Length: 514
Image 1 (tube, helix red, strand yellow):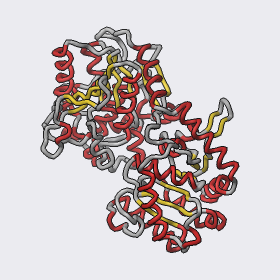
Image 2 (tube, helix red, strand yellow):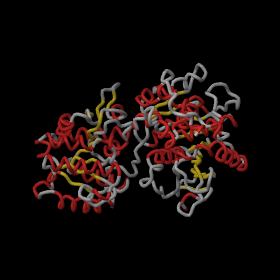
Image 3 (cartoon, one colour):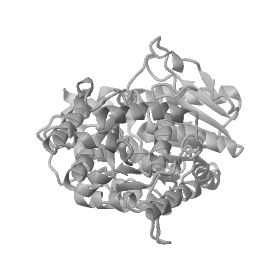
Image 4 (cartoon, rainbow, N blue to C red):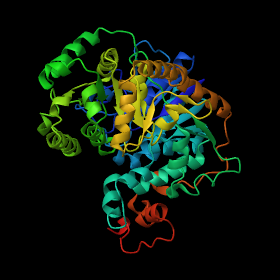
């Protein structure tokens, strides 16, 4: 089968450039790449179709075609989309249904081959897939990864700031594109059942799924996988380098009598929702936890992140300052070390080193949509204490079998966090049991091969082509094929979707009149 992945934002190249350095790159690109490679290992041909960038500052993304060494069945296909230089994802909307769509159609017509099925990612990919289906009848699945309404919730969008937020993030276009994608998709893919219920259940998407025929789209819960080539219990040559770096940090930060203690390792990005402070408070409130383990905070970008926090700007700098204030208040500096882990290979090496000390991974996020990081740590043999809010409630426990693969905690309760950590740190038998259960859980359910097989099951079911005039799905707004100011999505439409139809919105002018 020939499969195309539609993913205009970010970009792909053999070196995975900028994946940890730019907000438009990162998690969903890893997801697309690894799923594509795993599908190719199953014998299928895969094109990752993305945006071509012709810009001296971004030379990695200029060639029309590219490939991953050793993976001849996977192509990176770059199609021009608007101006030649780099554009942030929020600026792509005027070009998706014009330049990019036409370029995709021309590429496959000139190449003499036609894909069998399409899988689209994020709102921009989903919109393009709906337009492509209208032209060709090709069925598509849609993986949202995240939805705009939840981002609006996080940013606390209200009637007073809606115009400014929309000016920056183009939420009107994004939400309308998401509604189009979910209403036209033959299959909708989520990582967890909770994602399906919580994200798609938002009032901003009411009516989008009901707009289809009575049968509706086919739902599939297909979790992402762990790269077990990297996150493994097997020793790696990088382990020795990381050991020297971390031992230097321990010597620098800790008294000699504490340097051999286990760690509670936190390697989350510095984001408010990751709730680093909750973990620090657990140490502050529990004397036994302080006597049993050190807190290790891994942060990319500085050799001594907590002491060199002035190097960090924005929210990251604020969070580090708040952690430091807590350490001052509770005299916790002798209990805490910090060091950089700069990529996946270094994370994996650190997890293996931590496991040798019977350490524990901790992710006390206020909410975690899926939670791949704990699974990566578990794959390296490190037991995990993780938030119960979000995807980890499904990945670390199984209600059908009663299986328990890690400890779930209320992230707002530092005392509960401390108790769970001590369950593992105080009992070698329980630590070993959760270590083994975690390794087996990842190997049995959370691999990219499993993800690819889930995709193939759904794609095979949807392979039969549809008529270009197939009924069902919301009308596609004219703006996406004729992006003029007169056709733009009005703020009143965004307000009605997000706040609800009964919420008056007469005080903020339509952007088209500005």
